Length: 244
Image (cartoon, rainbow, N blue to C red):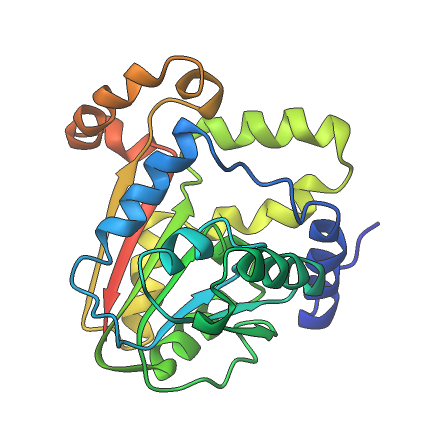
């Protein structure tokens, strides 16, 4: 039986589980680039001299494309193995001077005066979501923004994914189970309670990657599903924006 009843055991489990997956996240696919472009849309009004932090950067699948657009940033993650890979990749890309790499969890992070903080599929991996939201709030300057792409627990796609992957990788659900905390209603409650003056969420991605990566033309239909009432509640991703 896996005991994940305290913060240390939770993060130790996350580190050990994802130690095996440091280079296994999907990248260089039609599905990934659609998500990346959703995130990059949020950078339109971010100035190059802003202080930017990425939470849960992993090996840099989102970090590297953002660095390539001329931004400097702080990148934090609990996985040392992932950060070693990020350092290696950013050095190869000659962008290491744009990056400050920090090995810690967001609940322990004490960085301040950030203008923009973002993460991708990280909130369901934290131990205490309320505490994380408060820490993000305290890390931002007044008027600063937090943006997150997060899994939507109302999407049946995730449970099929957990079931299929779970046959191959024991402990998948234990690592992902806090997806249940990431309903739209709960995320809005958590970030408003943390003090954010404005919190909004859009839902995206109807088709799973197995279809999109084979028939990329289906991506043209995605904006339609985003606008369909009721149906959009069940799309795979939340795009959360919170302004301090």
